[in-house]
Image: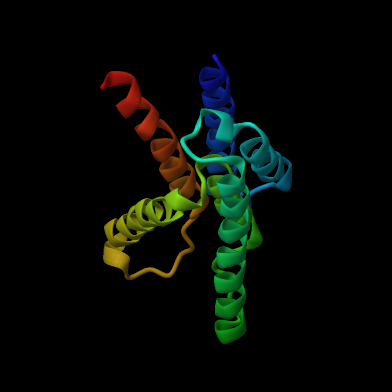
Amino acid sequence: MLFAALSLTLAIALLAIAVIDLRSFRIPDWLSLPMIMVGVVLAWRVSQHGPVDHAIGALIGFGSFAMIGALHYRKTGIEALGLGDAKLFAAAGAWLGWQALPVVLLLAAVGGLGQVLARDRGKRRDPVAFGPWLALAIWLIWLWPHERVAFS
């Protein structure tokens, strides 16, 4: 029952984040910050990892994206990876544990890159919302181990 309630909560939040980011290129704190807290406090109860792994995941998720975004901005003067993305990646770590972050990043990056390449063969410089790709990757990884356990 807890897994179902958490899954529904996560799905609604991720869908809202994806839609808002697609429209405005912003991820609102009022969605991402509670996701971090819920992930650290509750998600570990249905996970194979303990609460410390989820707290570490939130810290690594935020810290890594914030650092990459700051370095890119310092070098180019262009904000390409904002703090909204960092907070969403922190939520990924909070919900899934730090162990899942590389896979979440890989799936999201492949999705975003595919979108860029499919759109005018990557020649345009229009921004791409990364939040929807992160949201999809988080959702897929959230469901994957639970389905595997349930059907084995």
